[in-house]
Length: 380
Image 1 (cartoon, helix red, strand yellow):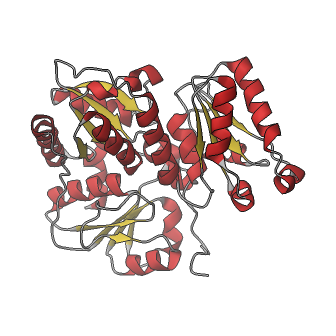
Image 2 (cartoon, helix red, strand yellow; image 1 turned 120 degrees about the vertical axis):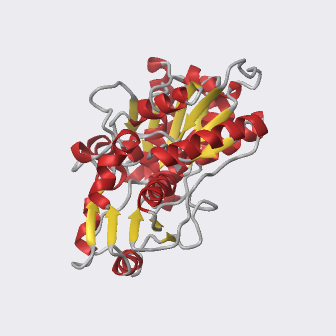
């Protein structure tokens, strides 16, 4: 029963991470499900839904099809839709029902690609992991399939931004703020994975001198681009004046030496606890440490923290573990839906995230790249 949450919410599922990562790239994205997943995703986890066109659908899996395994109906429906919509690619992602029936996503994607001549992906998502897992798979697939191997390095300093989805940053303008930071640091931005860039932009990613990974959803893509093009990557988010200076220096070091960089502060102390995705939480922790001169601990409830967390940080996904970590802190920074399990004696500072509370607190989600100082005053 340890895996059961009595009070807190769950993070956006891996299948929604796939949809969020691919939303702007011109493909058909199908959630293989009976009903419900599409409305949950578009209503709670996708702030771009009412302002931007995208081809996100469910398959309408029936009980008989699930039991008998009538994959041909799904394949036929997708092929027919592709003939009408002319997508750049086709992606099929899983939910709990096809997971239980043992659906072969890669095989079905191969059949769809053979019949349509359109690049197709099968993502074996289950609905049981978080958005980080799904978005990571999707962005890596794009890096391996669509990044043009023949592209040449640009003559000027250039960068890609990896790991941009509204599930981590909502629609606060963070993608523009990070772009501004890179340009002020002397880098022209080739592509933003995947907010505000087209599939054509992403195809030119191999021409960049460095990749900036702003959330753990972009780390797998960064490794794939390094494998294919030798491009080094820097992990971090430009939050706070001192943290920005360290990140700027790391970007130039990576571009000149070809070595990956991960600038993060590590001061002793655990009075402040930040709960959230690894890269953004560690960037916030570092910025707070530089501002306050005291250590900040990070608790990461999602995947993608391997090799990122410091020795005193935690990887904990279960409610009981999170409650225990909260009791040891004096201040907790987390999504408002964590407040009910925070002890009364602990100061709670709200930091809403689309991936955890959906649209409920969307208007209160800050752009920490430009608004860190105001946020830090509330914390410190």
